[in-house]
Amino acid sequence: MRGRRSAHILSQTGGIHIYSKKETRLLEEAIQRLFGETSYQVIRTPCRGKYHGHSDYSLVFGSGRKLYVGLDQRNYVPKLREHLSYIQYFREHQAENTERIKAALAAHDTPFCDAAVEVSPYPGSNDLVVYGVAVLTHRSGIKLIYRETNMHYFLVSGDRDWHSFDACMAHLLKDACGEQAHCMVCDADGLRPTHQKHPVRKREEAVR
Image 1 (cartoon, rainbow, N blue to C red):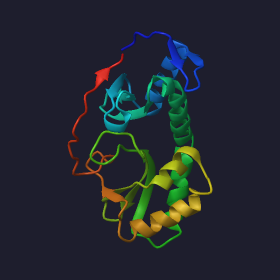
Image 2 (cartoon, rainbow, N blue to C red):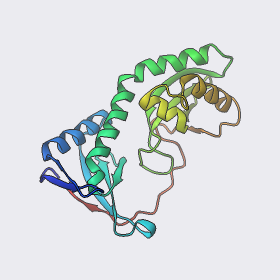
Image 3 (tube, one colour):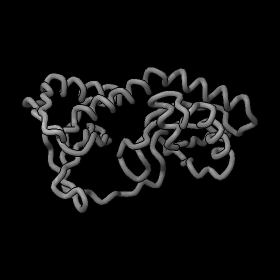
Image 4 (cartoon, rainbow, N blue to C red):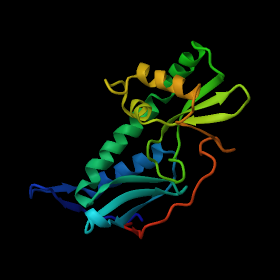
């Protein structure tokens, strides 16, 4: 798992990008640390169908949680950098965004008495997809995970035209106080939705 070689990665234009094993390892370990993990493996999964002949690369952490990095080796390091920028931003603004969401809830008539910004795998899997969530505590004590794509991107990259805080909160308030189409009840651990399914696993192999 720790043995690494220099990665010579061919670009689509035919040029060669050389990423040192040191840079690759530093990126992987920084991502591992920011997700609160203590170990990881790089897993290659051969693609099927349209992308037959290509491979997906993922980081599988000691907890079993899995972060999809990207398609093919040539994209591996650039995608690691992108994922690192997202989780870094998330952690740097986690406390601030928690307070912003709590203040917005307090300013409206809602049944929620507390909130927190957390990382949670996607329902039915260990996949860290749309992992930036708001955990809402109902007055009854029940905790709900609110997961929505625009809110996720706000939490990992900040205000943008299509995922501003105000727009994200307007959607959260409407959904959490209404149909709850984007909400799921937490289990006892607080960060995993209940009723987990067991996904069909593709053939995978450890790269290191």
